[in-house]
Image (cartoon, rainbow, N blue to C red; front, side, top):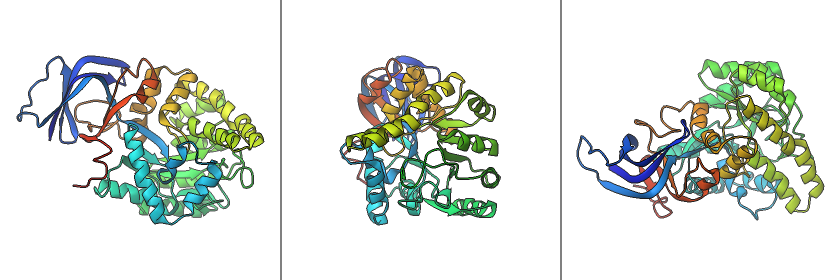
Length: 411
């Protein structure tokens, strides 16, 4: 299928500029050409379809770097508190959870997200969903999956449901890494600290739950097999240990300081804060009547994280956008602008920065010849206001323009 998109403005996310009065040509799943003015004819013949963009702004499809796809429905309002809703869903049978994953994948696509990184799932449902998408059984975003997380005994994601395998000591960590790679994990996810899912009964965000020696052994084992590693680490000490052990990325990082940010930059460690997801945990607790717990979460992690992201951005850290369970990607980008980013910088966290973090910059993350035709069309320029991403006209994945009607069709 050869497709021409005409009368559009192309957003160059890397340069932070717009090519006005442009056109873009697609052959199959790939972008093959683009330019200003009248479209050049294809060397191999005419176009099979022409899409009139009506002066809209064409941007790369968005990338959500921190998702748990089977429970993404929890980000919608009116579903109760995260601690209860996530556990109820995670403890249901896999067939039910897969239905949620499929439905939530459609929801992500229709919101402009064409690639997700799933950061752990009970029974490796994330990997099964990835494979189903790749095989064409269902339509969904591109999925990058870690399988199960790797936690210490009683660590994060082990309290209310088993989203992580429990390990203790260097040998068990190494075996767990090998097991996830054997089960076709795209990357490795460690649980380096406590979190919010088991708060306050079972965990605290600033507990350190994996040692330096355990992490170093696991990270080296993954790197030997050319897999990157990220870590759930909220508190300062858990982040410091992970960075010194050689981690590639930090998820959450709620109380960084200048020295730690400098070390992260020196070691080329990326940062995925998931601000919107964390803030919404507190909001849900307040809405449900747990106002003391909500204020505790805000004081402990939400407010310090704003300062952490400001500091990381000011120091030029590679920052990527992720929502976790309760967040929203556009809200995440809006929160980044509140931390000092321009709209262009915020947009890069969900496009070109995110592609770099995934090491998929050759195929996604920007509009360029030879890259996948993963695209969104919005009414107004997102470089002039990141909130303009909410005015979404349509989404395209690999050259296929998606609608609610064609999502369920399998050819």
